[in-house]
Length: 193
Image 1: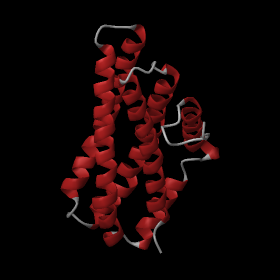
Image 2 (image 1 turned 90 degrees about the vertical axis):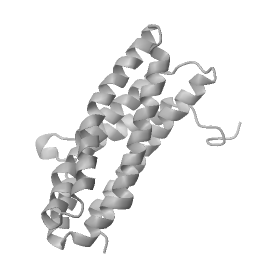
Image 3 (image 1 turned 45 degrees about the vertical axis):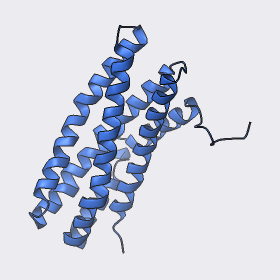
Image 4 (image 1 turned 180 degrees about the vertical axis):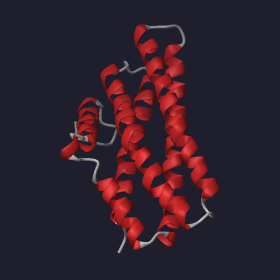
């Protein structure tokens, strides 16, 4: 039986990917002359900061990566690379948020700097998610014990812990729904006109 945490991780990756797709779609539309939708751009950046950077990546670092390192050294270089990427994500997002503010304020060159920084982040994050799914999770499935998975499953399930008032899944879902409500439907999707 496949560990629950693997499905949770893949579901979270899917949600992150959908948000990144929306970001790239909006940038493509703006480059083709569409007016900037600053509320949805801000919601997208808030989602990335509040969920992947604050909850998803730290759980991977603390539980999944640590358990794999306990069981094998075969993935040490891969885990070190993924951990570096986790660390780089937050400063990159801070820069993107600053570029968005400059873009919204009409600062010279900020529009293109925002586009380039956001697209660069999206490309790196997609590659990161793909590396985790295609390279790291197979190692985890191979080397981790049922006891390891019990701890990892619990960690990924506990994101909504009412005892501590932590509701990241609710916060992330609210931001995700806001993005869906604000973002225009990509061509070929949504109700027929």
